Length: 344
Picture 1: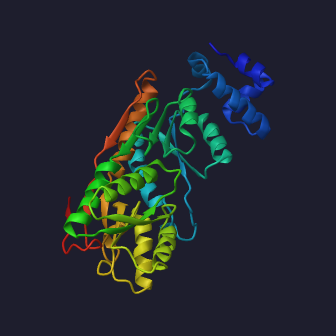
Picture 2: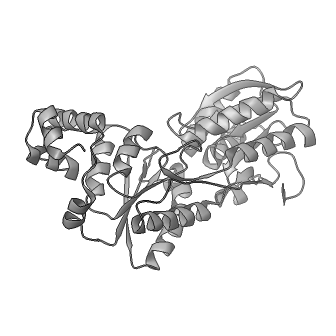
Picture 3: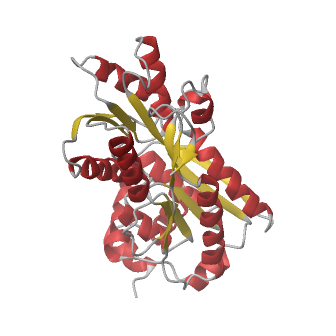
């Protein structure tokens, strides 16, 4: 079994330095920290559970880490927080029932967020990670040291606990509605950030569904970052084309709302000139004009199931890894061209 002495020897540092790196201490030089972390991953070092038990008393605190996607402190509507808020509220309800508190942390991809995640792991009993805030292989290493559940992670994961939604079924049903009920054949797609598993999955499924339907074509994909502002930017790109597609599908509701508002500014009629759809079913999608046809994912259930799974993992570290995929539904409103509301 690999020990802390093996790590220290291979990294050329003291055992105290290895300990500081594992605690997320700021007293270690960044280059040294990277060197030690690389050795930890290479050797597959996992601290002895009994030693961890002595140094880590139960804190009754759960950490929640997610990506910061274009957060605008002045206009909260421009952020990805509408999605996160519903999950966080559900998590808090579960934790209140067992006397635990929630510690939130937001950040951007890269070394600072990874340092923050490791530092946070020393102050909590378990971690909820929204999307893959660091590469999956590093999450797996971290999960050997502390209970961890990924929200909206990869459906193919075999070593981590994941709670996700059925992007495939939702996108396929939405595409079928646009092609069969409305006869749309030319499509545009506003995608999310490529580092988000859900964004990659939704684009891949939409591409396959469109190209698998006779006479249909995906004319343009514009990359966004899940914010309303990026939806507005994507709409301007589409407006610069000689002709708009029949329908524009968006990887989330906030970008779709940005598209709707930009089209309105350009005097483009939705759904008369072009249909627009989203994904999530956050509250603003119901009150925007026109109301947004979207794929509803059970955001509160995501938070509830993830929190419950994490508490189970804290109670029994030997549980087999589990991937739970929750159902989605297409919510029909008027932005797609329908005259009445419903669920498909």
